[in-house]
Image (cartoon, rainbow, N blue to C red; front, side, top):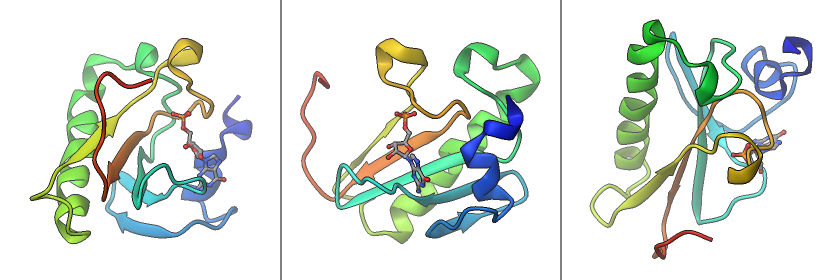
Length: 115
Ligand code: 5GP
């Protein structure tokens, strides 16, 4: 349900977050349980539960999440060394918040394959 969408509450400032980037379509804030020195969640302001609900008309919006990642990575000084972007979908991938979000992780070495 939309009313249970935690990230909509962050977007509306009902719940506080450490916001690092915002534009008309996108908000980005630090993950409350960081998995790397830099761990930012980049979310569309529109309510989209998972990648499975993405529509063709959302294609530009999803592109804007990546442009935000590019900008934040540069701003936070990890662009040259490298960083990882991840979007989990549903339970097998470990999605726990059902409002799509791009994880931007940086500031350390990452292994592949992921766990
Ligand atoms: P997922 O597992 O759905 O891909 O990622 C959800 C992420 O949201 C997790 O990394 C979790 O730490 C983060 N998270 C959950 N609740 C909050 C919150 O209230 N504030 C912030 N900033 N991050 C949260």
